[in-house]
Length: 218
Image (cartoon, rainbow, N blue to C red; front, side):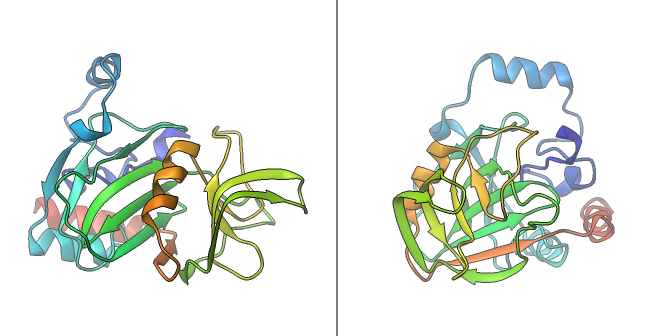
């Protein structure tokens, strides 16, 4: 499972093909050392992209066009973990980028990534839809009548009930098509997002990611 997880905030776009969000030189030992001193969201660094890096990442479907900077997460995110840091990021248009293949969500404001987390998504036969959506409605205390399940901090993107919402997190969990988020992350996104904000749900092609990596390090 972890081998498929790429935290989009990756200071270098290098690790998109192997599934992690930090430098290729990172090791398991370094990851464990970083986790021993948990990262406060406000301590996350930030990596600014050159126009060439941003273009290559957008062409590979890793980030939206116009991305300016990414969070520099210090360790590999696992289910239930997230980073959120909007310190010194000015007001601007908010957009959400979801990659089902990498099982990650990234939140951007004015082109700057302010949050990222591992997600759960639709099980086989109940796939999460791909495409560009708008947040249609928000409900902080929504409870699904169809599945008799709480969906805290729901942000609906279709009129058939597909939403981004807080969810129990585990590599063994899936949803009925929604995008499940760590509850605390969902709370932060719910507070930041407005009706009409864009949510892009993609499934990156590993070949496109490999091509972007090749251009990044050629």
